[in-house]
Image (cartoon, rainbow, N blue to C red; front, top):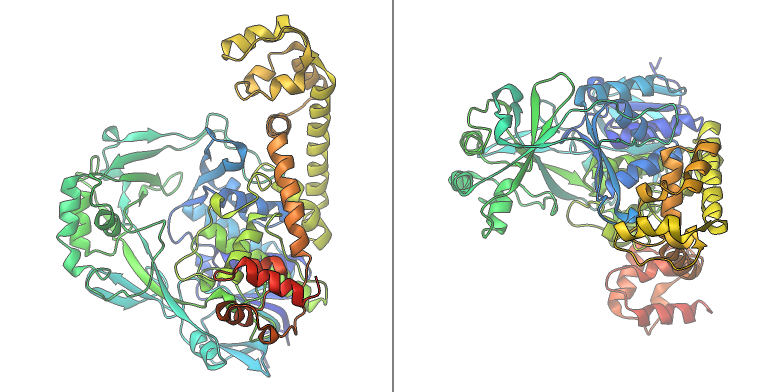
Amino acid sequence: MSIFQEKYDVIVVGAGHAGSEAAASAANLGCSTLLVTMNLQNIAQMSCNPAMGGIAKGQIVREIDALGGYSGIVSDKTAIQFKMLNKSKGPAMWSPRVQSDRMRFAEEWRLMLERTPNLDFYQEMVSGLLIENNKIVGIKTSLGLEIKAKTVVLTNGTFLNGLIHIGDKQFGGGRAGESASFGITEDLVKVGFESGRMKTGTPPRVDGRSLDYSKMTEQPGDEKPHKFSYLQSIKPLTHQRSCYMTYTSLEVHDHLREGFDRSPMFNGRIKSIGPRYCPSIEDKINRFADKDRHQLFVEPEGWNTVEVYVNGFSTSLPEDIQFKALRSVAGFEKVKFFRPGYAIEYDYFPPTQLKHTLETKLVEGLYFAGQINGTTGYEEAASQGLMAGINAALKVQERDEFILKRNEAYIGVLIDDLITKGTEEPYRMFTSRAEYRTLLRQDNADSRLTPKGFELGLASDERLIRMEEKFSKSDAMVQFFRDTSAKPEEANPILESKGSSLMSQPDKMFKVFSRPQIDLEDIVKFEKVSEYINTHVLDDEIIEQAEIDVKYSGYIEKERLHADKLNRLEDAIIPDNFDFNKIKSISTEAKMKFNKIRPKTIAQASRISGVSPSDISVLLIYMGR
């Protein structure tokens, strides 16, 4: 007699950020779901820095929230500091970020998952996959148990054949204090999957009581903190903890160089590629030898703990070198270690082997999400987990697949980049990767995605009603600006104080407020505006939304027209059975890439590296377009 039900709709392997979102979305869509992990105490563990969001990543968290995922809610409930990054730039670049309480973050995730209906849990290592006729039918555990399923989502993070490096020492592990996972890679390679190795790293954790913060620069949170979740029941922070900033020095760099001959990165023991945009400290001082210092951010791990994360000091150097170098950093002269930094190598599978649903091309019903696809970062992983969980559930329910386009979400950009271009180094999201970033702002993720989440059955009535109310009120405020005139005698003192040209006759407020020098504080000084806000009881979120719509209306409309034009190519579907080999006039490279990636649309085909515009023109002709 099995200890499990006869067959699950969805089994999720791994309970990091990707696995947690995958399990939540599949279960919330009504599927019987099993979440299997090697340690139930470490659900949604923050393996690296204790923070969510940041440049482009914050947009992803808001998109997850808008669709009905959990990451934004958990981040808000366990935040100790909030910052809106890039406020000096346009709203397309604004990116929310929270400093999190690491222990409470994992606890809140577990509690939310335990409150989710249709979701079971099991603690054990998954050592293999049950595959029959190129179709997934279940998993095998290290105890020899077989658990049957209609679909399986793999979210193994850094655990697949994980190998930890500290100086000249190395040992198996998925992260510090936890064992690696074995067997899954081997099963996948047997059925024809291509695999590779990547690496990532983490800094030392230190005792905050041993630091001298008076020698560092304080980094407080925002005076008026926002939040990630669009739910009104989730409240912004009322008090916050500060982070701090300090710097390395030439002396620190000299100490670090003493260990280069024992560094696995330099002595050849690590051959895999690490994240380009989050390099180790030894990599930074080697690559940027002209820099005499680098920033270090000193980040508290929670409200009450004394443990501190040294952001910017990721390293795999010997522990004695790490300690000696850190003690030369201002404020760290008496530092005590909780644990040294380390690097970790792990297996991944080039994501060109996936469909846009994150289902594998080789094995039906098998989905990959997170670092197994070559990405880095909690947010990138969580968004893939959400999408894989959704599509696994939809497949079981025989419903249409759910795919986000590049002009609809950063999540769409992320997945399309992975599927179409692949990656040979850990992929991280940036605003520059999105060609429609004026449309894909953090403030409007709800209007873009909540209707889609609601249609799926993930986003609640409360979310949809809140979103519709917000945009109804902001649209009405924008119309008020279009209909209402501002008089010179009221406007000119404000314009003069901001160095903007004066008015000689009344003009519509929309035109006045479109001026780049005029900001939100100036807008509310106008008596009619102040009266309108008070009469309609508008909160800051609605007022800010209206301001963005006014000030950037021209840019937004231009980008929307551009997106609509390019979307015609997104609608040009390439048949699944299309024979690319019959096209004689395209380049050999294009033919090879088309056969490998099997693009679904002309637009996707055009984004494949090595494919030229002439190749696309020929393809269009062969398709009769």
